Image (cartoon, rainbow, N blue to C red; front, side, top):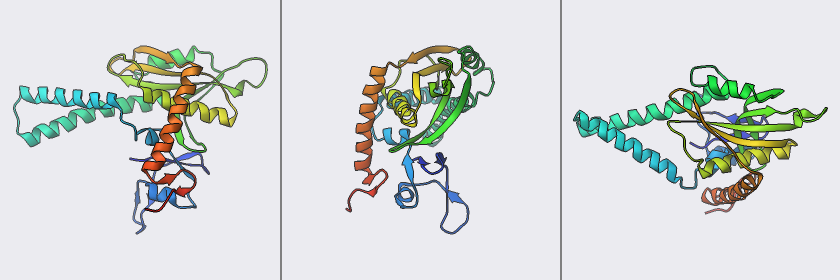
Length: 250
């Protein structure tokens, strides 16, 4: 599903009214084309046009584990397929639920360790789930920590943290660098000095922090150059120039 952020409100567009006035529906790129809608696609919507081998590997693993589980108790094909969908949804939804709690700093057994770690970083202010719409894209930043550097203007220096709930420690995926490099660039454009950008990998099982990956400035600069190329790819695939509507008529 495509997600969009409104430049006027700096917030995510969660729904639009149906034509018949009965309820709402998910926004589409056709809605974004309307001149009155100053919308920007989300960072993840843009990066989804690029193949992600790690995601295919995860799906293969889920399929294998489902097949193995159903083989222990033989069942009809249709029932086995539903079993696979159910098991995949459980794994996906658990990670999403914990991520949402962490982004809100909501305490539960799986978030306590990370909240304690953040509390010891000396931030003078914190923001959670920060939504924005920049020139070419929008997004929601999990966490911004404000740093006091010097006597004045500490509010301009920040750290960006992104939370990943995983079953075991792993290396970062390239798309995570694209995402955080885009977030960093957006904050810099607003006027922030970004001190640090990091992914935190947290156990879904017990909340243990497996690892913290701090991205270097060189990595972030390279990641953003790649992301800008992906923006161009997204525009051409969708026949849509961000901020200007249609590229050409087919």
